[in-house]
Length: 107
Image (tube, rainbow, N blue to C red):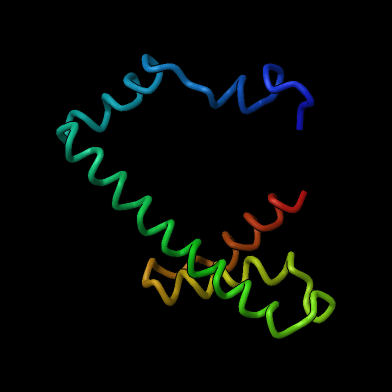
């Protein structure tokens, strides 16, 4: 992580101006109205928030009863996300995708 925000990859690659956003959004707006576009985004974000909230509850409940020494939190976090995705009927996350995402986060 860069010590200076203005030199960070977040600023250089992910802080987008309105023109960049509209350019990419035009592909979707050929098929959707602006309102439909935002409704679909909102629905997807809602499902993701549900899964994250459920995973957080599972994580906290587990460590309320057990020590951090019993299971490494780095292993428990993806397990909670996997279980939460099943419970919230978000669709099961494939094991390989979950493992690769967890691995990249831990690096």
